[in-house]
Image 1 (cartoon, helix red, strand yellow):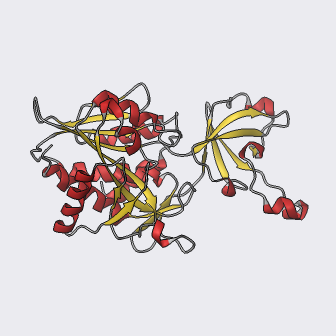
Image 2 (cartoon, helix red, strand yellow):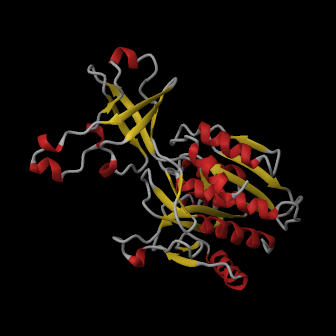
Image 3 (cartoon, rainbow, N blue to C red):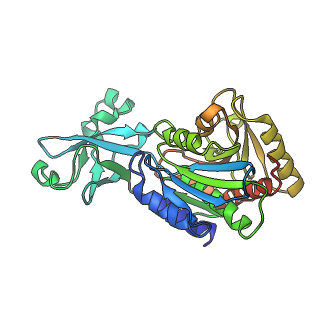
Length: 341
């Protein structure tokens, strides 16, 4: 499968934090092209032991989170409207008039209602709605909805996977299915090769709600080192250039107090000598990715962070450039082949 096909397959799967089942199934099936040792742990993370270099060999972990942002049903009003709370960092500015799906015992389509501008006061028009105040309209009565929908059911945006110009695509949940696709590209490049280390891949659950999946799997696996793969901010017309990477210019190699400087230097050197495009992302403290949780697991793990530049994060229209996904995968493959523990 091409990277584009893998991204489409992963992004089309539903997997809001805590209910990652469909996304886990899609990811596990893709991983089985590289190993038969694929499991889903009790916390909902996919774990694949890809390569065993033998007793005493160091173990490297590659991690990307499989969950996506969404919402969770809190209750159904007497009038038949569905009320929700956020699962992850939902951008409240975008909620009104969105088409959504409620994942109950069967999928139920709905829309987030909005007051017509003719009935909106000047003060109301300036405010961002609280998520607890939105109402999802399905057309059903409360009695009808109770056949299929219950508190705790997840809600996702409806979004189309589409190709843009210059090798770019747009979809929901590219955060962090793009990271998962990068790791799968790494495995394709390593297929059939002898590796200097044992290799485990984790597509972890619940990153968007606190990173618990990465914390539990890193504790269980206790690797010697890890590379977390996520997305980070790509430059847009209204953003600060200093705080953003650029699409098409390759992996954003993370530098932060919680990240291992030696791994950073090695990744940067490999990118330079291999002709892989690269850019550096500097953070003054925590990275707000799974790297934060992996690095402090089980007595501490040397951890690096690679990110795919992404525009419009946490929206139904996230945008990446496919070449960046491939470049992240290539950099990891070259790093693994040269790994010395």
